[in-house]
Length: 364
Image 1 (cartoon, one colour):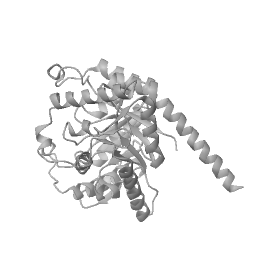
Image 2 (cartoon, helix red, strand yellow):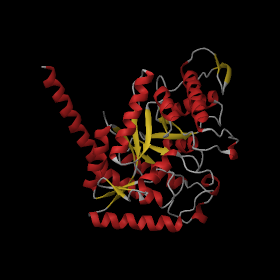
Image 3 (spheres, one colour):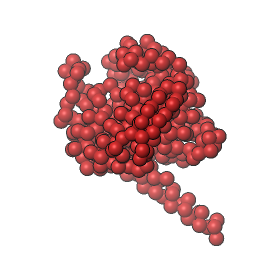
Image 4 (cartoon, rainbow, N blue to C red):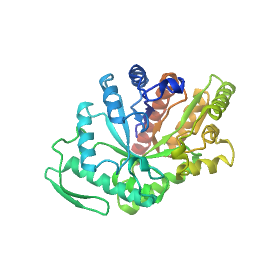
């Protein structure tokens, strides 16, 4: 299985003073960051919610790149599914088939957006209906009806179908049983935050068990982890500790979302961190605990060789997509393209060639 790399695209420089950036989109920075990821050979970039509408940011960045893909965070239920399906299909055309829909259910309702469904299991159940309608809208050649628990559609239809057939790729993350159920039924990529190797192995096996129960192939697995690279191990860890100190000093949590408690993934991060800041060879939890957990903020720390070895260990467990971004997004993307991405791709190529050769020997 080829390995895929996903970076992060932001509408402004996160290192610039907050007051100077608040409420603004830096189009020059957005363009340069997208181009840096393309030159570094990233497959695509995640555009999260909260820093401008991902659809418009992707459209702008696509106009300034040639092959870079875009992974667009989208919350099911806040926009009618047939309208969302038509919108994404349109963007798929204008970008030349370069988008992925990343479904974010959220660990808590968002009343600021009119979202009041408190029960997490219900939100995943609703997400399943939502994605079913979206996919039917992308594929149906005739108007269709849908009578579900959360959505009732009469004559749903879009004359615009995606460039990518039969569906625009869909990914989803989450730690609850509902997340696994929706992932195996409606997505091709299941997203995790980085955890120790044994924990990731257990979660991949759990995903496979849910897929087997549903009688479908398990989706591929993505893992999000920050990469902190140094010329030596000592320099890498010095850099990591400096980042932790800076996060503790400057990070300002959103008071509205923080009051809602932690997601299942965040609770897992904090529980792992209680066992120690460092796990396996390079997994560093302190960048997560410095901000209270809750995001893809765990890190791999070390020289390029250490980072490569660590990523390959996750690949050997079944992770085929790595979402890697750093704390200095533009320059980190360049470094990842220089030191990490080509080396990992080459080692994966060797591994797959060895598997194919072994399979031929067995077949003789």
